[in-house]
Amino acid sequence: MDTLVQASTRFTSANDAGILLADATGVLHVVASSNERTTDVEEAQLGSDEGPCLECYHSGEPVEVSDLAREGWRWPHFVTIAESRGFRAAHASPLRLRGQTFGAMNLFSEQPGLFSDYDAALAVALAHVATISLVQQRTNRDHAATNDQLQRALGTRILIEQAKGILAQRHGLSVDAAFSRLRNHARTNRARLHDIADGVINQGLIV
Image (cartoon, rainbow, N blue to C red; front, side, top):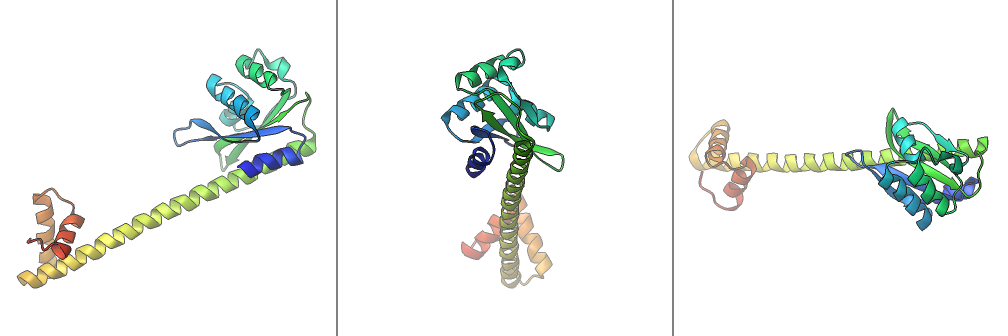
């Protein structure tokens, strides 16, 4: 995200850039900005719940403001802060993929005026790159969590199978009967099956 905001100011006419991302509950946070004054302006949007980036996030559509001085009636607090930091125009692009909006990227200019078609198209392209990156990162994280859960489940299954074998041999039971004995002991003692199996194998638990 830091690389993206720097690229946005390098390859478009924007002077500064910032990115807001929503957390799992839909609350937006500043995750990247080209400098402190941009962070101040983005935080002002969040604090006052107004501004082009928030409107862009909620609508899922780009929002372009060619002259912030004309938008005081619309976003009074945001415009005051933005102008005090030297900004005169803004362009917000949604971080959106497959109907889901994850956040928004805001580009700020020190001079009023609309983005050129080239700059507008590039801003959308950069936002799309950021969205794909974000989705990929979240997908990888989810896969890692799933793999971890599967490994834990497999470890538990192996532990239980070993405990069943020990009980079957110890008491001359069938494997099914050994499992029933293990499960009943866990239920009677309100314990996890995994913990009882571990006790049988590693702690000499008598079941």
